[in-house]
Image (cartoon, rainbow, N blue to C red; front, side):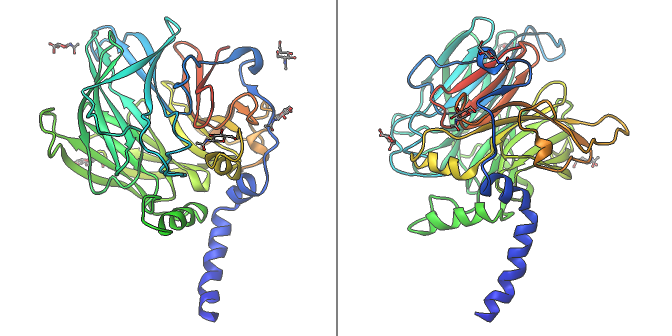
Length: 424
Ligand SMILES: *[C@@H]1O[C@H](CO)[C@@H](O)[C@H](O)[C@H]1NC(C)=O
Ligand SMILES: *[C@@H]1O[C@H](CO)[C@@H](O)[C@H](O)[C@H]1NC(C)=O
Ligand SMILES: *[C@@H]1O[C@H](CO)[C@@H](O)[C@H](O)[C@H]1NC(C)=O
Ligand SMILES: *[C@@H]1O[C@H](CO)[C@@H](O)[C@H](O)[C@H]1NC(C)=O
Ligand SMILES: *[C@@H]1O[C@H](CO)[C@@H](O)[C@H](O)[C@H]1NC(C)=O
């Protein structure tokens, strides 16, 4: 007992110190968020749901899909669509938060065009009939001159989490299945960032998952989350470009960012030189510099957020849009179907120019300012783009800022309306 106390006390102290903002901001108190705030106007008139279909609900990831007029050299984009992963059955199958009751009803993929204003369901083609489908993180290669391009989707399937490779075409509402990617170190894939048509980074959110047998699966993942244990990792994966190679398609799997607590969203900056990874359980985003040739990552800095950071997306101006969960206990209650809504908060992180010093008070326009909750980052500044106590929009887990259309998209893990779109 004495030994236990002697070992446990410093560890608990370390935990309390390292997680102090998270414990206070996102567990002990419920932040006093407004019904809705949108940084470019009035959320009640300028943000509207995309919902159109009963299956278009509980959406996790949003990813831009750029359609280039000709090729990569000619930079002109004819349209930026948004690809969306949803899972109407999430309350019966969620391998991150539970429960694991019924894996059979399939989730869905959608494509939104801001030009036509239409959201289209992508029909899965050639998808193995007996294969379950629970999409989470997704990302597609750009399409050039109307050609098809690859789409990669994390699939929390019944037996284990895999990554599905599809081919999508700007002209058809179809996702043609190419192959299923599986690896012993795909322990708990969550989000994907592509480094080429046949290579990507993938985060693994936990090393102890709910899939573990008996009570282990209901205890260890929670210990890993609550104590912010730095066990999870990001890997870089290179595939055999030959689509027909479906038995052994993974040529290389390299761990590039180990020892991160609950690695979640990942995104590569427009220059390709920086990578951001969300660390959910300690409410931070970690930045890494990236070697473009080897895809190796070197840690550079971290930024505290006033919420448990979920997914991240750079926009083309180099701002990182982070969405997350301001009150974790409410989210857990919602995953267990014991409440209806949980709050949302979307923040943009921008690098400070040159020698600019951070302001001690910042984000002052927002109804509830991030400045009131976390210290200013050393080399960045934060600005709230959207926030809601759950009334206007619940469980925002991904924010996507599109300077082309001016739209801010937010998807909600357990939002009935799936996605909300705000426009100035
Ligand atoms: C959100 O805030 C509004 C107005 O302040 C309030 O009426 C509503 O009950 C709140 N909703 C939740 C879910 O807290
Ligand atoms: C936003 O618009 C609604 C509906 O038109 C209006 O009732 C409300 O007062 C507006 N809020 C602000 C802050 O202007
Ligand atoms: C489009 O696909 C065709 C047929 O595979 C190929 O020849 C062409 O180079 C592609 N165009 C671009 C811009 O990638
Ligand atoms: C969630 O709770 C509602 C009632 O509050 C019930 O109708 C619904 O079936 C429940 N869903 C699941 C997946 O248990
Ligand atoms: C990037 O990786 C390549 C290949 O491993 C290596 O030769 C090069 O020195 C690295 N560049 C930097 C800046 O570390």
